[in-house]
Length: 91
Image (cartoon, rainbow, N blue to C red; front, side):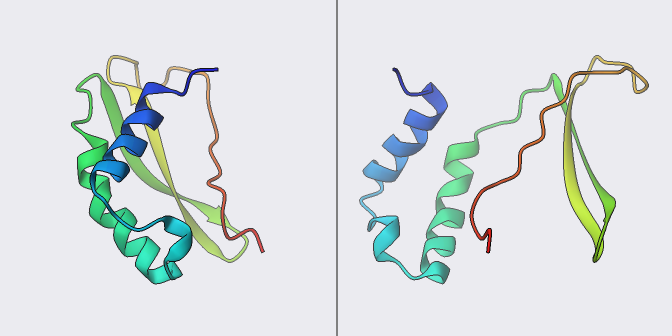
C-alpha cells in the first residue's frame, strides 16, 4: 500500500533535515525538534478552508477545538464531521 503523499513529504523533510531519530531524544528535545520542523511541513492554508478555534466544556475546564469548514459553506450548514484525537500520552 502506498504511503499518503503528505505523510511521505513529512518523512522526506525529516530525512533531509539530517536530525536524530525521535526515539533517541528526550521528550522535550523531541517537542523542540517537532516545532522546528512544523513551519516547513505545513505550507500555506488553502483559501477555500475556513479555520475557527473555539473551546468546549470539559470535565476539568474548557478544551480547545479547531474547526475546519469549507469557506463557501453557509454558517448554519450541517456538514459531515471527522473527530481526530491525537495519540500519545494516553496514560
